[in-house]
Image (tube, rainbow over all chains, first blue to last red; front, side, top):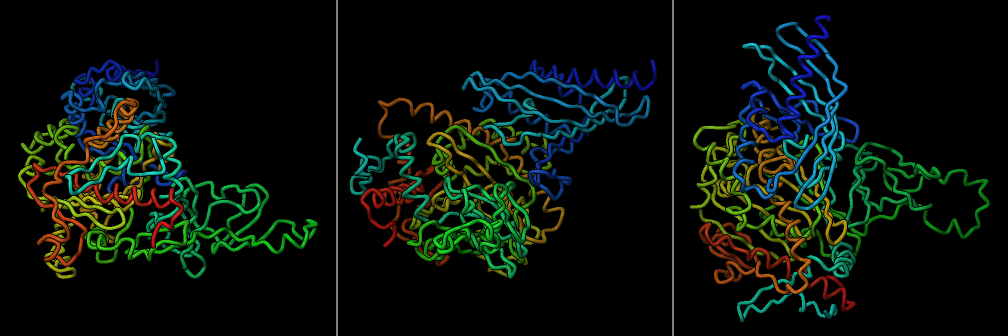
Length: 168
Length: 447
C-alpha cells in the first residue's frame, strides 16, 4: 500500500472515531481526539454565496482557539440543566468523500470531508438534517493522530432552534 | 372569546394591582392575523442599518411583518424603501438579501426599476398593444408610506398615519443613543449572517429580551460554566463576566410610550467590556455619566419586533412573525466603526459565546419558547401569571436616575437583582392592546 493510502486510512480512522464518539455521546473520547491547542471554527456565511474568511473580524457560528472551548461545551451538556440539551438529541453522522489535501508523512495531514448529521429531538419529536463539509488538520504525536484544527462549513445555515457541537 | 374587546386579553387594573396577559395572546391564530393588520401594518418597523447600504445603489431586502420590503439608496445616496414586489405580476424583485444595483430587473417578464424605485422599463412596451388606461397607472415600485432613520437605524411604516420617527422612539432615544454612540464614527453590523427559526410565538422573544427572571433557571448550565471560568478554568478567550457578581447588583427598568421598554443592571466588571480600553475618549465625547451607562447591562425592546441587547457585547435582533407559532430570528453583532482589531475579536468571542444559536445561552431560551407554545395547547389555561413581578415597586414617571440623566419615562423601577422585575412588559402589552383595540374599533392607530 502506498504511503498516501496509509495516511488516508489513518485520517479516515480519526474522522470515523470522531463521528462515532459524538453519536454515542462518548464526550471524553471525542475530546481526546483533539489536541489541547486545537483550533475549532464554524464560520458564518457573509452572503448567500460568500463564506466568512476571518474569525477575528467576522462573526462565526463557533470559534475556539483551544480545546478549552470544546471542554466548556461538554461541561454544559453534562450539567443536565440546559433545556436545549435535555433530553439529549440523538444524532447520526455520515462522513464521506474524504480527500487528502496535503501531508507530511508521520507528522501532519490535511483532510477534506463531506458530512451530514441527522438530528432527532425526542422531546419535540422533530427531525432535522444539517450538512456541509469539513477540513481537518491532523498532527501525529505520541503514537497518535490528533485533530489540530477543524473547520466546519454548514451548507444549510437556515438553522433550527439550537445547534451544538454534536449536530455538525 | 369576544375579540372585539381587547380587555378580554389584557387585564390591566393598576388600582387593583393587577396586570395579566391571556395565553391566547400567544396562541390564537385569529389574533395573530389581527396583529399583522393592526400592529405590523400600522406602526414603524426596523428595516435595516445604514452600514448595510453605505453607497449609492446599495440595497437590502427585508420584511415588515410578512410584507417583503426593498430598502435602496438611489444614485444620490437618498434612502428609499418599497414593497419588494414587481408591479407586473407581483414577483419579488430580489433573489438575494443585499447587493448593489442601478436597476432591479424582475426575473419574470423583465420589468425594470431604478434604485429610486421608479419604473425604468416595461419590456417591449411599444409593441405591446396596451390601452391608454395602462399609461394612466404608475408602474413605479410602491413606496412605503414612511421611511426615516435615527442614529443609523432605518425604520419604515406601511401606514402614513404614524408619528414622526423621533416622536415614536420618544424618550427611549436616551438608551438608543447609549448603543449607537459608542463609536466616534458611528456603529456597524459586523459581517456574518445568522438566521434561524423557532416554533413559537414572536412575543416570546419580545418578552424574553427584557426578562431578568429566567437567568438563574433557564441558564443554570451557562452559569455553571461561567463559574468555572471565573476560577480561571475553561475557555478564557471570550473574557466572559463573572455572572455570579451580577446577582448583587442594583438594576431596574424604564417604561416608555409607544410600547418601548428597557431593563438595566449595574456592571461589576466594566473592564470586560470591549469598549473599555477606549472609555476615556468616550467620556470626553459623550460625558462621564453617559459613558458609565454604556458600560452597564442594558436590554431594550423597540416595539414591535426589534431589540438591542448590551448584556455581553452589543447585539441587535429582529424576530419576524411567520405564523402564530413560528418566528424567524435575525441578529447582528454591532460594533463601533474603526474598532481596533483586538477589541473586535474580543467582542466577537463574547457575542458568540452567549448570543449565538450555536452558543451557550440562546439555545436554552429558544427551546423554552417552544416549550411555552406546547403548554399553550392547554385551552383551560387562561390568565398567565408571568407579568406580575415588581409591580409593587413601580414609580410613575421618572425616578431619581432618569431625572439626573435627563430623560422622561412613563414609569421607572429600581431595586436589587432579586426583584427580577416583569414590569418592563407593561408598556409592551399596553401598546399591543391599544393598537389592537384601535384597529378592531376602526380607529386610527395614532391620534
